[in-house]
Image 1 (cartoon, one colour):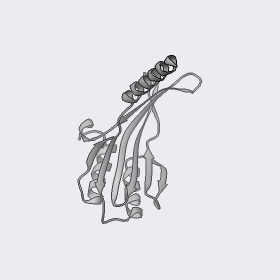
Image 2: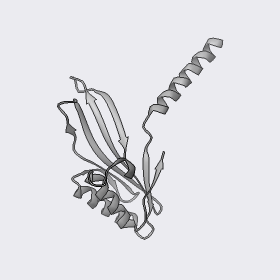
Image 3: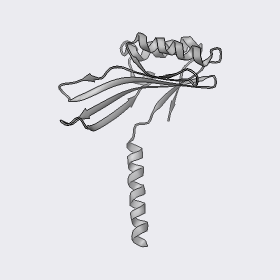
Image 4: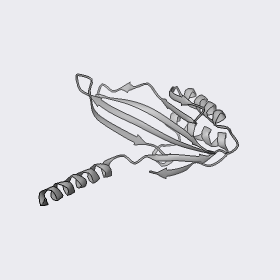
Length: 152
């Protein structure tokens, strides 16, 4: 019985360690009371497509939009990267995540490493990363309110 308790404590400790090392998403949120869900999804779709992103998931009935860039591959590091915007409309509030996903694959194509980096204003320089800034500023213009950031 003592071994069971000790092993359970060890497993819980490892789980807590892995959870602490996981990336913490940064959520952008802004109220958008003057627009319908369909209007918001249509406007956000236009914003991300103007940045060269492809729509990967769109449902304007429930207010979900996902867009990403095509994978870019680095010969030097052996990684592939994609940039993503994920939007959810809850009531009259738009919730969004901007992130980069980096992956490495072995010779057989199996993913051996994945890293997600979540972005906010403080992580990206205003004069670069147009994919982020143009969509983020467009979101503020669309909704007429300031974007706030919440670390999840």
